[in-house]
Image 1: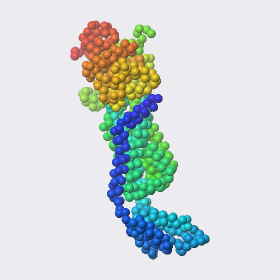
Image 2: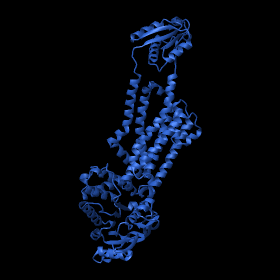
Image 3: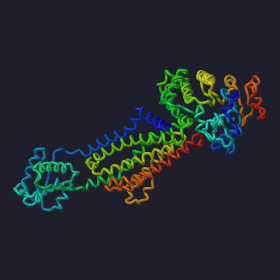
Image 4: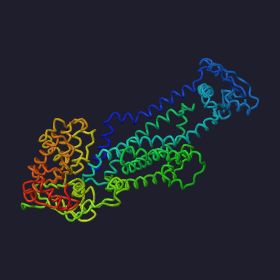
Length: 375
Length: 260
């Protein structure tokens, strides 16, 4: 009942203060708007395209595609394919839009008794190139309209996407950690160091509430609130980053459900860890100013940790024992397309153990007259 | 229940503080530690107002902090309402209402919310809490301000709210450190009236002060502390002999060998 009342008080303090809510959610919204506008400005291209498409083999369907292209206000130039490698290079470099290859005697696909397995069309394009992806979508729609009489193979050239994904996988964990840390900092410093400085924490210490309940009564709600703030910033980044980098938002959907669950669990494990870390520092400090000075130094360390992880290619399994860094490395693995389940789960467990240790330390500090009442 | 039932009993309380280098420099001393309370023993009886009188630095606040379990004695023990401050600190905290200028209320909350919160902190049931809130808020005129944020209350009303919240759990003993320190005359009157009201309600009150008139106005018995030791203890008549201030300085001279 006492723990419940303590938790309820923190939630009440936060959710009844419009300024606190705005301060917590605003960064995410600002990031989203800023990055999106920036991305739009950088990557805006003309909407009319002159497609340059290499054709291998031949089919009457090219004229159907051509008329669809022209109806959409664009033009297409068909070039007979001579050198596949050179053409692919052109597509990669954005000089050509796509390569359309038809199997031999393709137009016989409509004849009676024709086996659909004998007829195929493949489209090589660059999904990062707006002209390429536009032509691909249009051609696919035309080909699918014909019916299931042949197969369509699409071959996206993923060079830029790979680069984009790599950048995302290296930077996203760092950005997540930074946002989580600042979200935790903004609520925890005020709630713990602020209450200590103002003397309101001492008023609670005079009650019969257990010190461990007072510590948990801070860490649990502040972790939940920080999670909201971190989530806002995280969504702001995730939704705007592809736009900023000229990537498709869809590439974020390329991860498995399991990967998302693990990323969520990792975030869920290091938010209370950071909150309990800042709470412990705040309890030891005499004022908000002192606590924020210590916490700023800590934040620099955490940021360096996260950045180092992005540029050190192979960190050993021992990393699961290092708080926060373990989550960063696991997230990088998950964003790279691997599914380091064992590493992620051990990291989550390790972070929770560290959190429990810090809550215990905070409890001891709350019981210490030197820490709480020392001049 | 006997007429002189001990509600607070301190036995040989001792507390030493380490002096930081900064403190040593400020006080121009080479001492690394200072004895704040040195084997203090006294008893306060149920239903009375007991005053700890002494100059600044005599050990009054340290004594009250030990009795309220905020700090632990280095030696000795004390019982409050039958519970040991060393062995049963949580039970002691449920038996006392502790007031000091260092304990503050969060300005964001309303008196209504804080009363319920601190009631829950002391494990008071919902119905009992609601009834007690009605009684106390009405008795001290807080009901009209129950939904006003604490930061917007006048100093006097804030003091009343703090006092009422300190007794939310109907404690047997109210401990008050320097009750009128730093208060204007009107707010000081709110506090002294409140203490007399509490006495009428049958509460036992232990307060510390260096103000002679406050002891004369409120206290049934007084203990004079000098240098962390009990110099004299008894009823006002026993200790003061009609003039508390004069008696205090005589005792001070007797112990310290110096005139102020």
